[in-house]
Length: 132
Image (cartoon, rainbow, N blue to C red; front, top):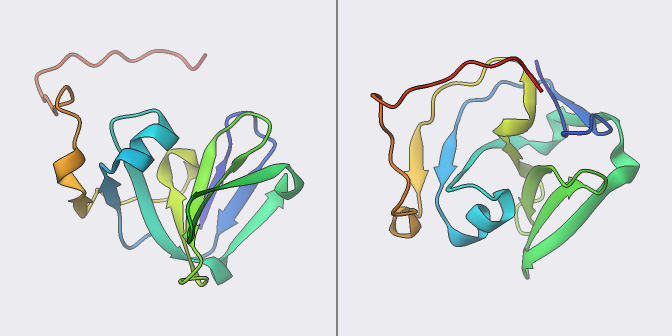
């Protein structure tokens, strides 16, 4: 089981399936919606996804005619996107997952929009800090 929440903790969800596909998206919309150089998403079955709390706090923004982006109306955390022509699937934002197994990314999309300034660097120093 996968569990997650928004930053303020008002919206909590669970997914009773398993994450089988992980995509890194470099499209300009995802970068602006996340405020990061890419978004990490997983297409999941909507029928196995449910909110435990905070569903009334959700807001949606249509970034295109057929695609909505759903986020917490209180803290702004992006939770998922959904295409209207694929109502049975949502694309969960994996940064909101707090419990459960997430596999390593399987592929990257919209590489032509990849931020030039970001690069993976295994030699870069990583600092471990207590949660703020």
